Length: 77
Image (cartoon, rainbow, N blue to C red; front, side, top):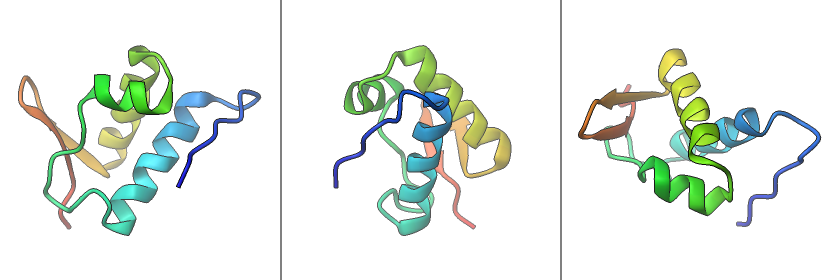
C-alpha cells in the first residue's frame, strides 16, 4: 500500500495517522520496535523534524512509547 500525502493538510498529522493505523492493524507488532525516525522520514519523504513531531504526538497519546537512545515501540495494551 502506497501512502500519499496531501500537502494542503498538516503533514505531521497525516504521518501520525498512518503510523497509528499501522500499530492498530498489527503491521507494527504490539511491544515491538518501529523503524527509526530516519528510516520513517525517508519512507514518508518528510523531514526528520516532521517525523519527530508525528512520533511525539503518538507518544503523548499513548500509541507509542520511547526509550531514549534505544528506540520507539508500539504500545502493547
